[in-house]
Length: 362
Ligand SMILES: *Cc1c(COP(=O)(O)O)cnc(C)c1O
Image 1 (cartoon, rainbow, N blue to C red):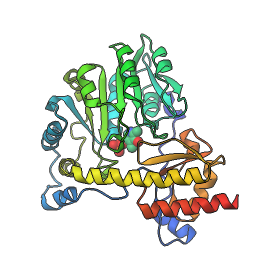
Image 2 (image 1 turned 30 degrees about the vertical axis):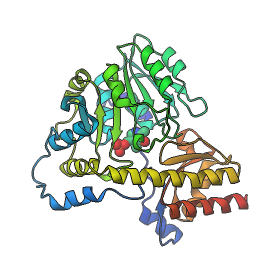
Image 3 (image 1 turned 90 degrees about the horizontal axis):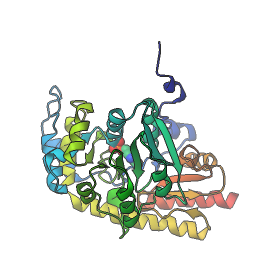
Image 4 (image 1 turned 180 degrees about the vertical axis):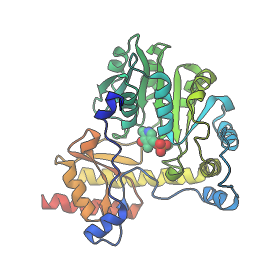
């Protein structure tokens, strides 16, 4: 068969070993997973009870327009119904955008290291990829601007950035948006938006009113704790949404996801509580880093990238044997670092204790 040549260069997403397998292998009675930036506090009770009390027939296709979720989100964000694009997770939105705009004669620009799916999808579409290195963990917006030319169709901006946890300040983002030519779609991925506390952070939804080439992506997988149900959304002006809609699969958001997400949006108290606990959790990590004089990026997210100046895989292994699963920085572009999701206070204490022992043994 004549597969797209570029597929030969890709490897499928490598899921870690299953929790059960790790338990057995190292004879552990519990495993704490701090690898995928999931919410250690689960999801809102409202979402759980919506799933229990609503009788969704599994034999019936989902509402392809996701009417209830769309209306709830539109009211919450104060946008119109046709300014929203719903996705099977924001990964699906990245795929839709790539499919709609990227091809072998188009170029696309992104930071590096950043979230892997921008490049992955661009490779599949055969687009020309321009990766602009981060500077001290931050997007180098000036160099990204210089990389734009007539062929550029999409520029990806991840703020706060995964895996560094850093964000773009409002004035910098605005001066960047002012300079991006109108033929380039700016994708602002805000998967960690709800965790941000920085005061000079922008109001991205308001920016979509002013910049007609901007789409903002958010997700229910992170602070809302609904990663299993796969719901994400995009906000942009209706011209962009209208152009993207035909690329979306008709039933891309499942019925349970629609139900849970609509209920979760209405429980902002849960979001606030998680945000606060996350700040306290990050403080535990900061204190540890200062105590051991480790380099890290101050984080606006629910994870932290810490540089241990040893092979990240070695730390991954050490922690795994002790029941903690984190992400080695090796596959993330930071070979001597690990990325750790902020857990509950006890989980953080536990993983930091193990890391302290690792450092003492060194
Ligand atoms: C987790 C994550 C996503 C994907 O989220 P889903 O909605 O679960 O697909 C997108 N972007 C970034 C930066 C992420 O970290």
